[in-house]
Amino acid sequence: MNDDLRELYQEVILDHSRRPRNRGELGEGAVHVHGDNPSCGDELDLWVRISGDGRIDDIKFSGHGCAISQASASMMTTRVKGRPSTEAAGLAATMHTLLTDTSAPAAPDGLGELQLLQGVRQFPQRVKCAALGWRALEEALRLHAAKLSTGSATTEEGDSL
Ligand code: ZN
Image 1 (cartoon, rainbow, N blue to C red):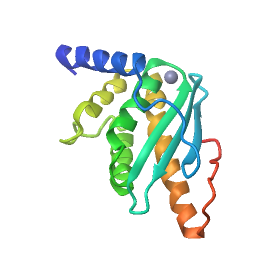
Image 2: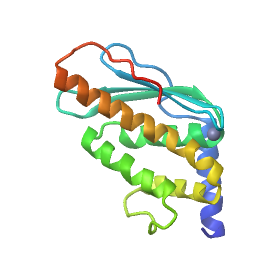
Image 3: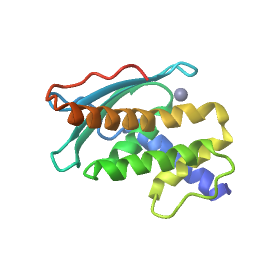
Image 4: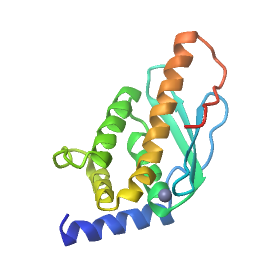
């Protein structure tokens, strides 16, 4: 990562951690999951509402923890809101590789500012922080799929990650 990218990384992370997007809670009809990262003390609650045609209608999160955990969650919500849940699942998998696989090639095109998150590879103790929101998203999508397959219309409460 060159100096320009490093600067941009810090700028974007700071901006999202100071002014998190999509912060709050969703009520009925949303899938709720709780995730934590004990090694750092990060906590995250995520609500995802998926429409009948499989689109992420709304997504909100609350929580506390280090700047990178909150910024990454904020960036995740802005990116997947309004997108098909299948696309969001693919993105979560891409981000998992980007964050954890140091042998992976550079970020694929089209990630936008999300590619800056690969900057955490320089800080191995921060990888779980950056991954927390994405893990919660994957869990929420799994719960939603399970809910559909059982035909249950009630709000599911996810297990702790
Ligand atoms: Zn953290």
